[in-house]
Length: 156
Image (tube, rainbow, N blue to C red; front, side, top):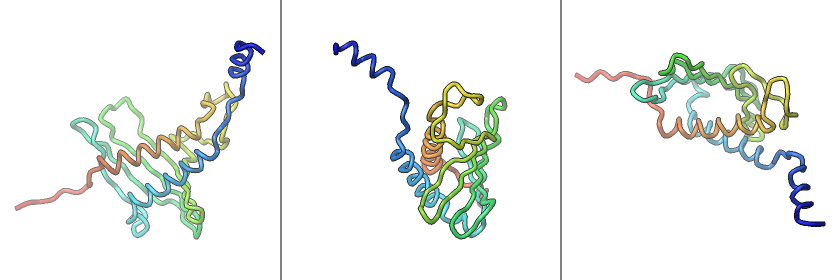
């Protein structure tokens, strides 16, 4: 075989999902959610603001279902500074027994498969599930660093 044959083989190789990285991301998301919202289990909801230039968007967290081993966390980010942008809604099942959290729904779109055929009807990327969970991980990190309390203090 020549070098060109090896290059051709490399180009034709199937896309593979790295399950180990995906599960690691689920674990990281669980830890970040628990650290950021430790008080959410007392009230089942929480609100804070995220800066967007001179304005702020409102973030609402709500536990919509809870059982012994799982919870369903719903995150809504609204009142964005750019009115043409849609509000963000993320549904995250939290698996307490295995300490993992994954994105199940993003802006009303559901994702079941770890890997998608491409092209597909919804035009999901091959690793859409990984990308949604990576976005959540980065968004939680941003929220921890930049989030603002949603209260007004009166100073006399």
